[in-house]
Image 1 (cartoon, rainbow, N blue to C red):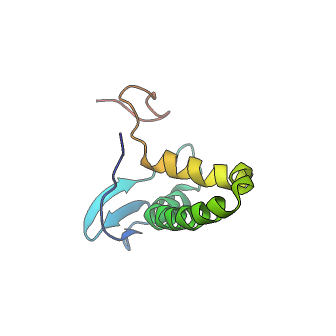
Image 2 (cartoon, rainbow, N blue to C red):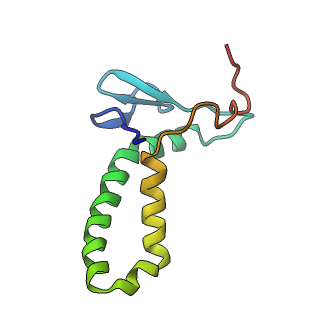
Length: 107
């Protein structure tokens, strides 16, 4: 099963750098847990994810041409990393395959 993401330009909200928005629609939010300071940095990374996926797909297309010319290139660690990152970003998570994140209350 292939997972799709919300279309549009993802960015952090001007009023709250822990929010990830598309236009005026909130699509995700990061939280600081136990005083960590990474919430805003995590939000910036998440907001860049669609751009990074597009770049990886472009690199994959280019690399496939190179692998056709040089089959030994398929055995490089970089090739495996590219494919693993694309798979991670596009494969749906099966229901109940992960637990509730620590610090999140279930309703």
